[in-house]
Image (cartoon, rainbow, N blue to C red; front, side):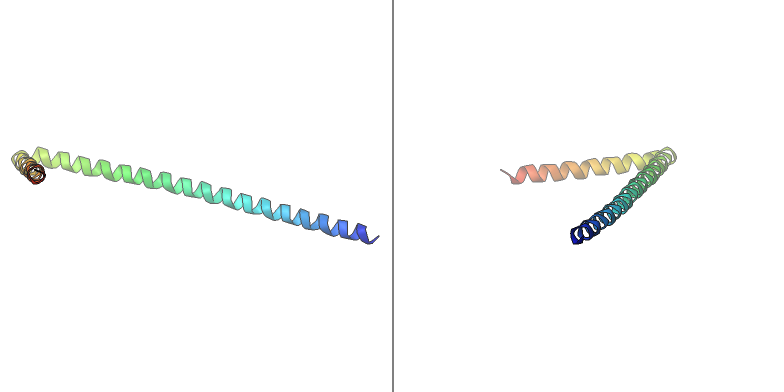
Length: 91
């Protein structure tokens, strides 16, 4: 009789543990799904911001073409000077 009670208690404990594991599994699944949805939303937001920046840059180039050429030339000069300096130091 006593072994029957012990078996019953063990089976109840196993059932409770299985239910808790199922609840935890569902909680983890929902947390992962929420994280994926948040990541998608942030990626879309970042893409929209990048497109806005590109559109603004294109508009600035159209409205100020000489300034744009000057900035590009200055950037190329700076990069060329830096590369020349770094290559010259290795010798």
